[in-house]
Length: 396
Image (cartoon, rainbow, N blue to C red; front, side):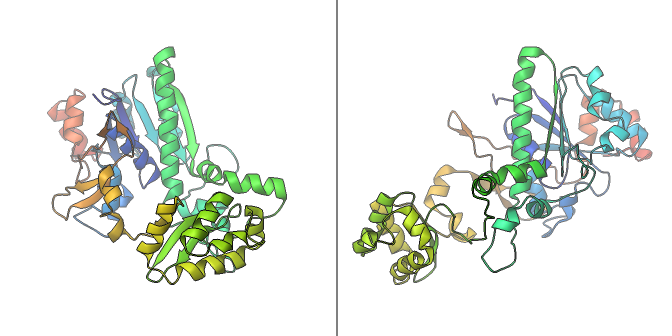
């Protein structure tokens, strides 16, 4: 039995952050009911590329394991229906703008008196308090606002976005952590809780080290490409056929690197003996190490440094990554059947419990695919469901 078996989640989120949270909860065994707008559904259904009518790889890989219920929450009857569906110990998560849920009488204070064990998670862009609370926001916008772009990219070039949705997915993870903490607390108190988090708080959390270093030194961090301010060599180097990342975390490790690459005297150069020396002569050090890697193929550099115990990795593209023996051994990704379109490679939750990989493969291919079944399980009669469908409150 999965750890959240028997737990039900009402998912009123879309795009990336909230759906990533509820997908993890689904993998952990919860029944997740995804509330979608009749007609269009989640915005990500229509992102490129399309692999079916109203189905994209982004939607599929973030919303597997969930039941799709199409419910119009702008309609009073839709709001009433959602309140009637809630059980006393449900988890509800939404990504509406602060105040929007309350306008629909779906705020925590509206629902909690009738659902004492309700765990209510509100996930917003800028947080639910403060002068920007009501503003919308997306991952790259928050990367800019939270300072992430100011430290990402190369010196002398424009700020750059991190190429994956690290703020969105991080906010999803913080939501999961908050929800699981509330579940544990409820086991002792019998009471639910409100959980609040945001993209901005997540972005600030990712900036922990730069913020600490700036507060200590008073110096703004600069964009350094793949390098880091505290250590060197700790960055990407070009090889004869591609690139590798080399990470030397100590002076002893640098000695091993120099020997493995055929120039042991490099470690005794007065400019490079200690990490502080190497940081002070960063450009000269990079040139010296690059001269050694540039004449060797990537595999040779990796083999030599791994044999010496120096952390190193080829800079993989996806074609290499998905067939890498270590990645295959972890069995984290698998093919997800999409029906009309091509199957896609979906990444599972990076947790194994008692050796078992958690992965829920169910995919609601169309908006409202599970509406009828969920409403029927909730006790609504066929005539009631038909009436709600006719008036546009639900879509089946």
